Amino acid sequence: MAELGGKVALVTGAGQGVGQGIALALAAEGAAVAVVGRTRAKLDDTIRRIEARGGEALAVECNVRDPASLARCVDTVVGRYGRINILVNNAQEVPLGALDQVSDEAFAGGWESGPLATFRLMKLCHPHLKGDGCIVNFATAAAKRWDLSGYGAYAAVKEAIRQLTRAAACEWAVDGIRTNAILPLANSPAMQGWTAARPEEAAAFVATVPQGRVGDCEQDVGRFVATLCSERCRYINGQSIGVDGGQAFLG
Image (cartoon, rainbow, N blue to C red; front, side, top):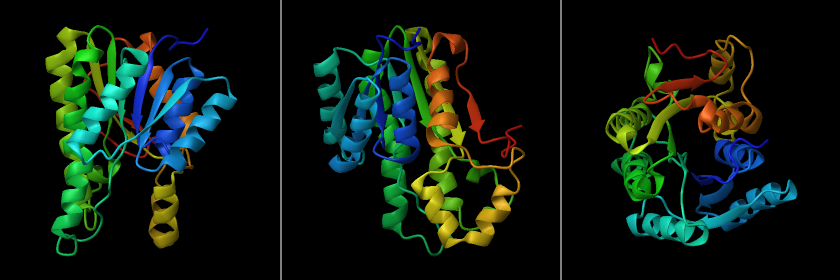
């Protein structure tokens, strides 16, 4: 029996990569999925994949850096389904580079698409999540590197998301809402681009994964998120969880 039957999920950045994998996995467990992103063609690809398996999905074009666009997105989903049970904040622009090389514009893009968009969307969805809601936010193991050279700006915005996650877990549990963060490692387009741009660094990094491989967007990360959003994990709240084959040590 589908574990998420009757649930409605909103997943940002769901047109490709990890977001798409999560959308597919949630739909496979019976959730109706609002597939949210900027590029309609990518959203339509995810919709086709979900519908080909007999799932239910809705494409919603949205720029997560625009508060008005976020509000319209939530209104569209609630207008279609009447509720939101699961919120997955996956979309993120990544400001990479040494601190003196990252522009103000790039850092602002990381901030506005990451913690600020997460903050705004959590608040917009809060009234609809009350009772049995589940929020999954995205952090990164880059913030756990002993040498943050080249990753400081990215780690900074992602760590802000972790703190918002913990605060929501503490403040909103009384409303029946669980909030957790994951630190995923998956064969996404971003991972593929990084591997192509920095093959030696990427190979050295993958060599530190105890399970010896990079995860699959749907089978490894998506399925875990679906489980995290199910009743089987109803007592898991306020945690940062590595979904990465054991690469990051969060102790």
